[in-house]
Image 1 (cartoon, rainbow, N blue to C red):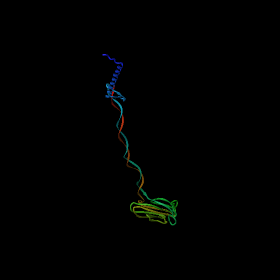
Image 2 (cartoon, rainbow, N blue to C red):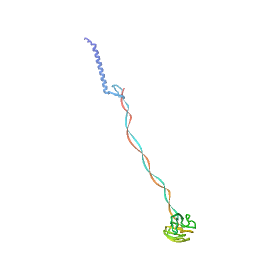
Image 3 (cartoon, rainbow, N blue to C red):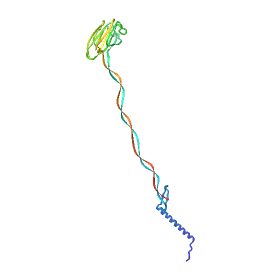
Image 4 (cartoon, rainbow, N blue to C red):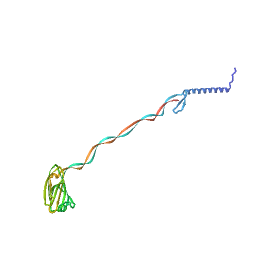
Length: 284
């Protein structure tokens, strides 16, 4: 048998074919592994090819996230309310205070000139004067009023008080003329020009006040006047009033403001950052 001689070129081609087949088989194995577990992502997000014979393990990897939670928020305000408060209010007031006053009657006189007919008030009033209830003046020939001693006279008015109905005595004497009226009625008349002459009369008067009028005149010469009556009717007690300042207090109520807290709460949804963990498979 004759050995065939294989050309050197053919030998080289056979070797290349075998190498190509080996490469193809290797790629096929790699593709098979990738098909089973093609990629494993790392923490950086890059994909790493895992070979069939790699050493892999699962680990918990931290990462930042957010979560919602409910928080209770409360606010406090103050409410004004009023409560009754008792208090005492005092003020100074002026009141009329009653009191008992002793009254003694007086004669209120108006002086006049007198003419030759013994008439008063012929030339107008000369002046006024006040005398006590009881009169006893003896001027003789001296001036009677305002330096005048002749042709002068007066009209006098007074008031008496009779507690209960009773007889009252009046006494009147004069030099020259005089006349007494009680409530407008003549009770004693000594009118005319004469020396001292005295009269008296008793009349019954009702309870209460009574008005007296006394007229007197002097022409010339001596002059005198006398009047008297019961003490009980010329002096008496009267209830009068006078202003008085006093403090008066009274209890009152006022509304006093107070404050009280009022708290109101509500649930509010909020967001906060959290660290979470996820399982990551790492291979070496």
